[in-house]
Image (cartoon, rainbow, N blue to C red; front, side, top):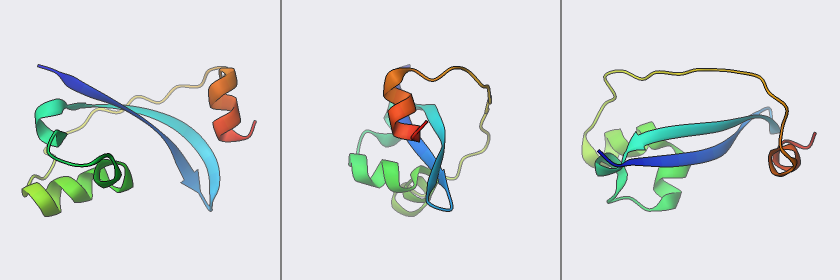
Amino acid sequence: EQVLRMERIRYGDDVPICFEVATVPERLVKQFTKDEIMSSLYRTLEEKASLVPGKAQQTVSAMSASERIAEYLSV
């Protein structure tokens, strides 16, 4: 199954705190625009496709930021 790799910056109190990479089955999101997916993936799936995630797996790790990611996170 094809998956879509989504990269985004997560914020806390308007401060960039995390670079997130999410993979989502492409069949679930291919009908939506990038803005719809990036603003709130779960809300878009629920409101526009009547899909509610049943499970998700999340892994958190710390590592040295690349130059590109460091710029996004202002570090």
